Amino acid sequence: MSEHESTSAVDTSRTSYGDEGFSRFLRRAFLASRGFDDVDLDRPVVGIAVTTSDYNTCHRDMPALLQAVRRGVLEAGGLPMEFPTISLGEILTSPTTMLFRNLMAMDTEEMIRALPMDAAVLLGGCDKTVPAQLMAAASSDKPVLLEVVGPMMTGSWRGERLGACTDCRRLWANHRGGDLDTAEITEARSELVSTAGTCAVMGTASTMACLTETLGMMLPGGATPGASTGARLRHGVATGRRAVELARAHSPKPREILTREAFENAIKVLAAVGGSTNALIHLIAVARRAGVDLVLSDFDTIGTKIPLLVDCKPSGSNYLEDFHRAGGIPVLLKELERHLDTSAVGVAGRSLAELIEDVRPHPGTRPVVRTLDDPLGAPGALAVLTGSLAPAGAVIKTSAATPDLLQHTGPAFVVDAGQDIAAILDDPDLDLTPQHVLVLRMAGPIAGGMPEAGALPIPAKLARQGVRDMVRVSDGRMSGTSYGTVVLHCDPEAAAGGPLAAVRNGDLIRLNVPARRIDLLVDEAEVARRLAEFTPAPLPARGWRRLYAETVLPASEGADLSFL
Ligand code: FES
Image (cartoon, rainbow, N blue to C red; front, side):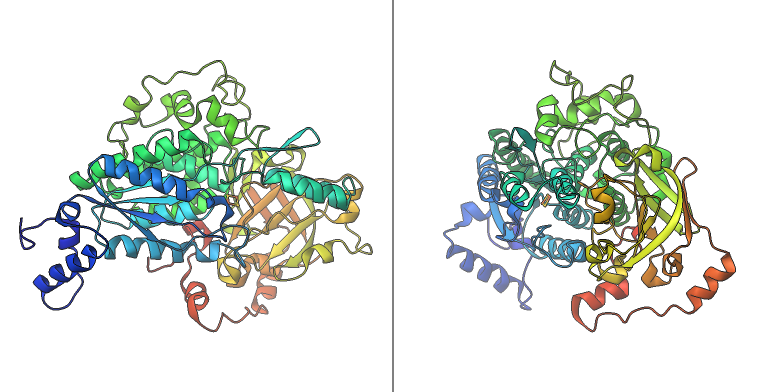
């Protein structure tokens, strides 16, 4: 076939030189330098987005997964072409990876569009990588499959099983409370993150992996196999093979998969796994890009009919490796079958009903994946609140909260993001009680990209008295691995002049989760007077941070940039 007649991706998506024949000629000339001949270049091209980085320890074993995907592509007769994108490692990125999620989404979307490929496999894992890749896929017009590195394995310290990051937070809280000395916490540190892979609990990374599988953007069984396991590598190979089939068919496109029904299924799975509060922001952002009208209240109307079924930290006591051994997402979908739209078809090309037809629980299933008749927790693991403190909405993870605090009224103690909050809260002269409501402001999208600072530390004096939870309220987020009675994502945020900016020490705040309310018990006129005096901080001077602060949408709308 001549280059002029070719339908190969390397010939149909051309660099602009004003002479299409020359563009094709030049492209094949340069690819010849990589050892590719026309036999190679006439194969379906599968682009593989790689997010390996020394700054992303969760992706440490991605090179092996990449080789597995490449092998699958080659076995199926395709040409694998890897390309790098930004990698967002949660722990080493300042001030928060959330500030860069949309940048990664733009990077990935534009590379899928700009580089010659018939289909793409996106390799991710750590918290913001999968949402960014889903957003990119939703904006893409090529078939896309996601593949994740998989969760890490647990470690052990003094006979106790440990896994990041719920146990990191629990042990640190014990250290602050005086139960573990510096030598002990230092010794435990080396066992908390004992292998490559994403956090070992149902944090944001695993939540988003489970939702990606549910949405149909990942082959079945892909959310839970551990990093570096044979199961993970085999899933990578299968993904590579399947990518070639989609590349040949040029179908299905992500927007055909990301339907309203698929998102409703995802919301139900989110409730059943007791997943991360961050998922609400991410799912809304992906849905908006897919043209699906998903709003915050949908999570309450759809999700709160589903009880908590999966017993994993932080809502339960097990780890992701246990969930995988119990059967993972397929066995959970089977249990939820009557609540799901099983006509949904994803990248596997078969309906959900067909995919789970032969799935059966086994003797190891029930300790981790409970039944609808014998759930781990009541419906409503995630609740959407409104009220005078969050007129456009806020979120609380009730499954990880203290039941006695779900209806609570107490005086506010206010701190702002950017302060040394632990030092402030640990001041021994501070007269704080367990009844206080700790308020964190200036942690919303505009103020600083929405850091995961919402689960404020319990003041040391109270921690030493055995207090392990207090009501906390903020316009920020918290890690999916965190726990406690923490109201998050208050919208509008303080930096945008939301009511949170009007809160002063001693004001009474009332949390009433059964009524879905979070209220500031201050006279409306007084709140308006205080807000009239409020002066927002100046926006960043330049660059990405300026663009982000000027165009980011509120948390309740997904915190994507308004023009995306
Ligand atoms: Fe990467 Fe938790 S830090 S998944």
